[in-house]
Length: 120
Image (cartoon, rainbow, N blue to C red; front, side):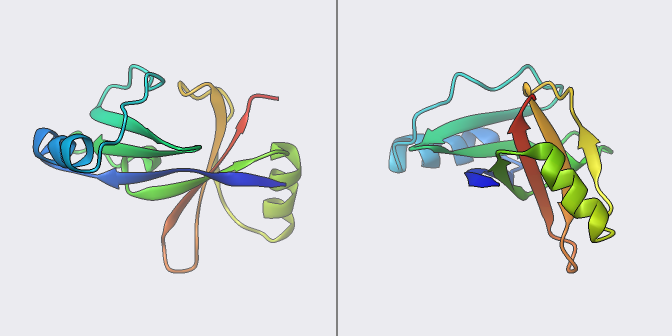
């Protein structure tokens, strides 16, 4: 059911300063796959995983604009059935601008987890 950690998203305030660190110091290559979101940020390809730097817009607290990690799943309908069976609440976005089905859940401590799958 799980393929891999798809990405880790970090919330940053000073994108250019942080970008310099990830590009110049660590040498991370920029991903060409970042959609035209309505908030600033940049994605990096790190092997078969991605790092997403997100600059949140003031007053917006949507799930994807907060720090989280994402797991690529191979069977989203099975995952949703599992979440339902355990009574876990989630937010599902099957038509995300990313091109994949995104589901957001929180663990018991409030840590945000994105589950995503290629659109079925």
